[in-house]
Amino acid sequence: MKIGTISDYINVKTIIIFTIQFILILTLVGYPAWKDRGEECLKCHSDMQKMTKLGYPQFYVTQEMIEKQGKHPNVRCQECHLGNPRATDVQKAHEGMLSVLLISEKGEVLNRRDLYPKPLIPSGDDMIRNLLPQVEYEGKLYPHPDIRNVLWHDRDPITFNYDPAITKKTCGKSNCHPQEAKEFHTTIMATNFRQRTMTTWLKPYGPQN
Image (cartoon, rainbow, N blue to C red; front, side, top):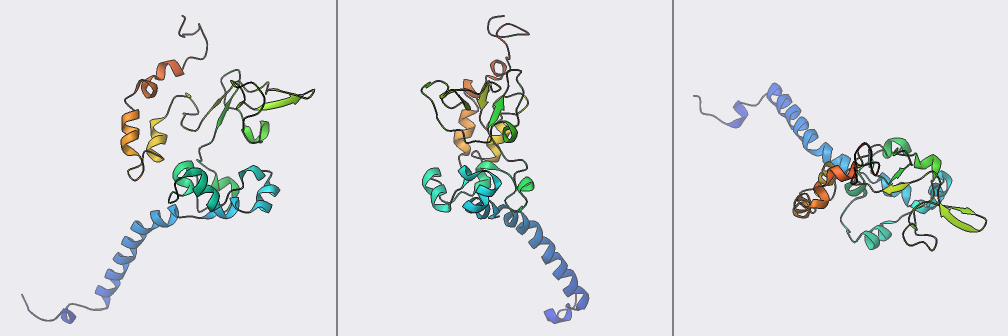
């Protein structure tokens, strides 16, 4: 083998191949990080005028509010809520995002945007139902007639079961609370899937059939 200097092995072709490989590696490694560090969520939601124009002033939030309420100063929006943090279009930004599920009497997921776009905050004197969507009638608040129940974002929107896959994408990630998620997945609450699929008291099956 010829022994010489590095310059003996470098030519235009070598430089081009090396440059292409470097760009490909940088793209493969850097793109996920670039996409995940999107700040469009906060840019939109910290603009009160824009949020009011869209019809959701209650979803106005600043970085200071996030850190104070969430107590996770280094966690970005999408790490808990998912969605597309790089998108500037409203629909694309919220694709795949977790949200509360409003359930009808027939066990169907209702469209919150059309049915009840208002915030879900405690209201009324009924402590059992004060987080259910309320409607006012003759000066009094009553549960929304079309909404039977409220399920939160850790549920599968089809089966309504607790969904471990959602936890793995959010709070159960390796850099967050993986051990707590692993332990929870062995509990009765996490594994009691059958009971959560019961839609009636007796039929087709239920706790009293």
